[in-house]
Image (cartoon, rainbow over all chains, first blue to last red; front, side):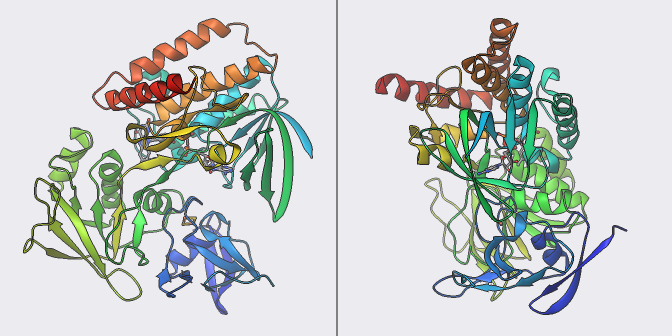
Length: 89
Length: 365
Ligand SMILES: Cc1cc2nc3c(=O)[nH]c(=O)nc-3n(C[C@H](O)[C@H](O)[C@H](O)COP(=O)(O)OP(=O)(O)OC[C@H]3O[C@@H](n4cnc5c(N)ncnc54)[C@H](O)[C@@H]3O)c2cc1C
Ligand code: FES
């Protein structure tokens, strides 16, 4: 078994594994909706998994529009569902 | 601003071969890749490759990546590597903007090889934005790179080699493939792959497409429909599949956004996957000293991407004043290898695309 990496998703503690990206860890944990669309707030999951399509944007450690499919998971990351375009904090 | 000699955008098979060839010639090289690992699409390919021995046929994709990376390692004094470094802008004066670790870094290059690969095409159907509608490459990445089971039951859309290979790998991972649908009247990929899948009991439905995805927050079902010879849905032929994912494998298109931004000429060439750059026989774009190789130059295969990378790397190094001792011999060998690779039934499509590209090029002169 690979080493576990703790993180939170919308405040809920979760674990991923060494080598995971944020999106792969969430998918393994059964989370498919990562954000909602800009106008009609429809649920969005990932699409390409290699950083091309921007379908996987989430808020990571307070930063919006992070491409979670190419962002390696790191211990203690705070991952949140993004609504719309995201905000600059 | 940081000054560099040759900058290679993308560390897939094309970019790695370009870097190796340029370093062999004596040039310093910087490889930039947005992901954490080099190797591009190769790292998710667990199947053995077709093609010629020269391009590691019968070797698994991820093993080819290992071979190329160990070659890169032997040039540690000349080749510098930045990972998690995304090129977000390219300007006509060969200045690049790179985002790494939340910081914007400007680089002035003397020459550039764009080897950014391709992106998956999308398909228009109702509810195609639901989570659970994935590119075939994404599903392959999830299971083969991260070891995560992508879904329980999948509908595959597209019967080209990617659709067929990914279907097979899904079954190996214990995922049920409900069916493979293909809008054309015949199967697109190699027969060996199709037969292997058919033997495992997966129906390959030709003249059939996906009509809509069903679900509120994620995919619960897929509705498919038969198509008439004019590719129009035939009413009354709908069928419902209980699946939790729809995999879209309808081809790739070259990633030419950076080239277009810098003002390099591109043209719509369907045989090459969409908008493709106009290139010289040395793989130089219409911007001086900016070369293009691999899927970014026209969607093809890893085998040809490696040869194109080698060619572009050699020519870029020569331009910088580092001609390889055997330049002429290697260049003609590369051209011969490319011609050989494009000799098969699938290669003729590429050849037609390249012929169109040359026509546009010669017309523009
Ligand atoms: C399922 C599947 C099966 C396949 N099977 C075969 C086969 O059997 N035989 C075969 O020969 N080929 C096969 N191929 C095709 C082959 O994988 C591709 O043609 C090949 O990988 C293209 O190489 P490339 O170097 O041009 O691009 P890629 O491998 O896509 O590499 C591009 C690299 O550029 C990076 N990049 C992109 N944009 C940026 C940017 N802005 N900044 C920084 N970095 C960036 C990416 O992260 C990536 O690492 C298959 C492909 C798939 C999807
Ligand atoms: S899923 Fe396409 S960019 Fe992340």
